[in-house]
Image (cartoon, rainbow, N blue to C red; front, side, top):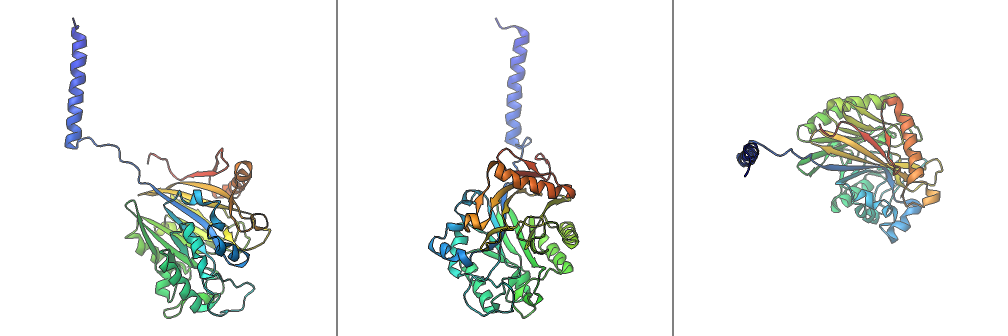
Length: 358
């Protein structure tokens, strides 16, 4: 015979199940919403010409085959294309280095699954408007979005827009390096100059229709490890205007990371795949950023070997202690910016922008 207290327990349990079922049916109790998943991957400077060009034309996967598993784990991949994809045109201005790449190397960029390439830099106009025009056409034909350069200023300032998992992502790109003659005008091809009031205007305009706003700058100085004062001023004002992520290029080496009011700033990602034999450029990272509708909340740093005398233009992941050395260096230079990068057991780094429960 079942005792009364036990009967009461069974009755209350059944009643709770019935009421909970009704609550779900009527919508008065809802499941905890899942965080919107968006994985962004950012890499540094890309130049697939020079000594790399023959290798890339023979095997388009060559420069990226070692890092493809990491790149393919992202939803959107963004990098800085440092040379025109064209063999047309003539040297536009006499410089120490002028870069150009066979347009067929776009197959390497497609292999890596680049979503957006920023073009606002000091080499995209090395061979003038004709080479720039072909570059734009090649990228468009191969469904790779672009930002930061165009056949006029309006096109150069136009953001690249992408949609993923219900989120709209906007990418703006600006050039703050010389020569100034490379900058676009109302009727002149070139790059979008990073005039701060104009940049902030563009951010506020695109913020109205985008959930995630990314701003890329070609800035600073080559081989400079610590950001210049203006970089920090620009980054802070961009975040305040509505940018979620600010990415820097041009120094060819790593610069610190900083978190500003919930926004992530990587002052320089160094080289990614760049046909230079400089022994001063050895390390880089893939910056993986996880976002939700509120913006970025976690970043992972995958250390890279870009020392071309060793890797011969085939970027490789640094593992274990080799990778930990790169992360510890980033920790050291980022600490004065109050940035806490955690070294993970596999030699990668982690940066938490906000708790996962928010």
